[in-house]
Length: 115
Length: 114
Image (cartoon, rainbow over the protein chains, first blue to last red):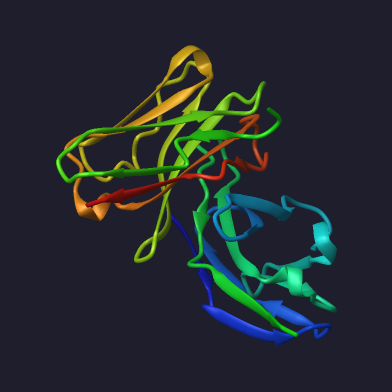
């Protein structure tokens, strides 16, 4: 079984400031990790994914995340946020073996960018 | 279209009625997933289809919930005898079904049970 914990339910940040959204996972097997963004009344859009290889993953819209196996973390970062980044962000995991690849999601972090 | 299409976008119905939600996945995607997003529970997996294999129904919350996928493409999620706790946004996603493939989500159906 696996679980995903997003430590902050809401994060307010001023425009052009850096932001970090935290995510920790627990799993008894190897996992793949994802960050999705959800704008109001829309579905989830993939920001980035970690499967293997380099632990620093770059995604769309200037976001990046770092996989840290020893700390079982996959925190999302952006050096300078824009108003348009206001949305809800979900960290998710799926196992890497055979079978169903359903995603286990964290509870989400609402990012509010303040002008 | 290029993305996952879900219909209707909104559905309001009375408690006890049956509802059907439709998902049209991205062409060529063999894997299809249904998730439920509600305020109290966050995003929960419901059911997974992969090609012609038997579906993984392990996330369905009760026997009032069922889903089918016809011809390996369009899927319908059916909720019978709806209850107020079924109110949620139902999201469909599809992927190529290979390990690590990201899932692409539709905009969801917002279901409200009166």
